[in-house]
Image (tube, rainbow, N blue to C red):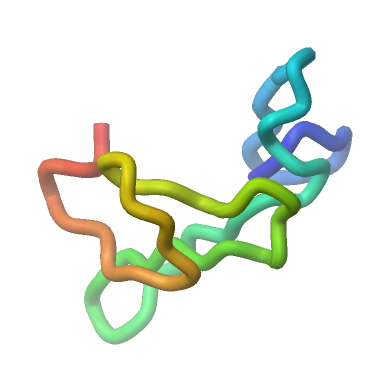
Length: 61
């Protein structure tokens, strides 16, 4: 996901908090994982910076 054309999940972000190629959501061993792709501003879940994390059911909306 990111703000560049051609990513699977494009997020329009004129303020540029989101990098062109920002993060990846992938399915691994029966769980969704969110991985930051060395974005400029980092990836945060509930105000906590994360590089890689299992996504819990409440986080997926």
